[in-house]
Image (cartoon, rainbow, N blue to C red; front, side, top):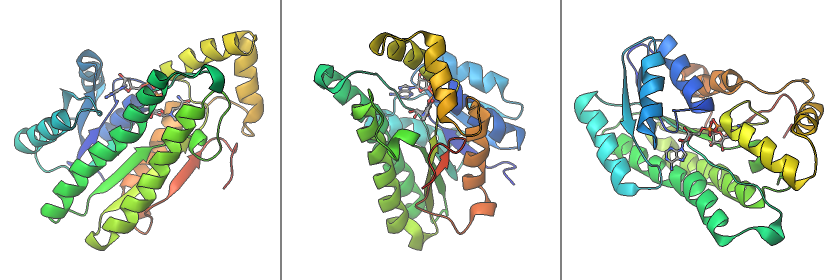
Length: 255
Ligand SMILES: NC(=O)c1ccc[n+]([C@@H]2O[C@H](COP(=O)([O-])OP(=O)(O)OC[C@H]3O[C@@H](n4cnc5c(N)ncnc54)[C@H](O)[C@@H]3O)[C@@H](O)[C@H]2O)c1
């Protein structure tokens, strides 16, 4: 289904983005692995089984996005799929949250989605490409998460933006959807376990047990659990879906 389709994945140097990039590659896509950390993007590209490319891309930098997406068009070809996945988190009680933390989470998670989606939608419309966009939101985009008020706010923004973009671009054949993962085993989760253990005076093991006990399917989520749904939303099996924010949480949240 994805043979020779050109796919841009942001934040693909690690975790969920890396898994998405590799899964697309296994299905025959030409992957453009991007990350703000060039070495990590390069590593992901080297693990792709099909032809792939790597680029340094900071999703908070409009000029950088324009340059890299144009370079992809000129040196790789017309891209049809954008996976806007790059994201960051920090953890704190609301009374201790700093403006820097707020701005960091908002900039990467919300503004990063706006800028990358804006560039792709402009390009799709101009070239009459029925493009597909999948944005990585979060369980925290459906239900505000303690210690993550700022992160939740940034991820609620992702869902709002996705819905608006989908309704605005549907008449051009463009589809925009989002995925909402739960507790996924990535380096972001490793950092969060340490922070949460400290903030709640628990051991890291107690935090992990808490994540698992909240998850009806009874285990931590793997990056591949998310990647499978991202590929579904990027392919023709989801042709009549747009503006959706699909929970991939092992049943934690059901609406
Ligand atoms: N891990 C989870 O439990 C979980 C749950 C729900 C949602 N998510 C979301 O999934 C996405 C991927 O998270 P992950 O768990 O794989 O994290 P991760 O930290 O393992 O990977 C994130 C990647 O994004 C890159 N990145 C950070 N800032 C960037 C920027 N400004 N521009 C470009 N790249 C940047 C990092 O270098 C890193 O390679 C994020 O949007 C995150 O919010 C994660």
